[in-house]
Length: 210
Image 1 (cartoon, rainbow, N blue to C red):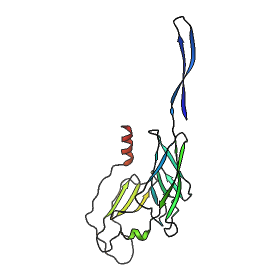
Image 2: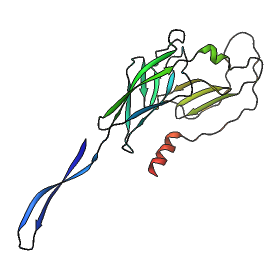
Image 3: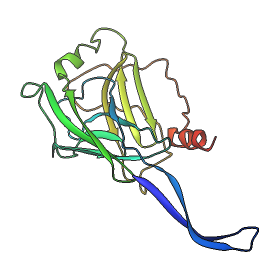
Image 4: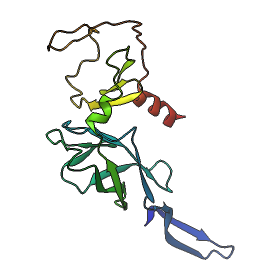
């Protein structure tokens, strides 16, 4: 699609005094459609977790700086920003579906789009449990950044959630160690480390300004 802008009229007069007036148009550019869609995922998404996150979508586009919206054909899924996830009330079972084929569409600002079928894998809870040491220390990392919360045990991503309530979600508070009720148990913590993280949203905004 060619984008054309009218900027006014122009008059030209030659040496003999003859003149001509015409409307001037300037071709601003040609918009090209996106060409590909990518999905970045740390691992298969968790089974039996409502609203489980699948991964982050991206679009390849010849037009630098173009932005895109994403949609998915399976009504159990949704795209929030560029995050592909199950809807908050939906969960899937590994034993019933170990892999799901999704058709994802990326649409640019001019309405041009590209679609791609993307297979996504469902994680097996039993496999995740194998990463937990029942008779030794576990390396447990919680990353909270921009309303996105990741729980990792011994390098294995166990869960990932997004708090979309930007108005009411807490950005400060008390850090606490939580233990859920259950049978008699011994719980120990050691080598607790706190590391402030820079907002990815602010970082991306700064890089675009440069």
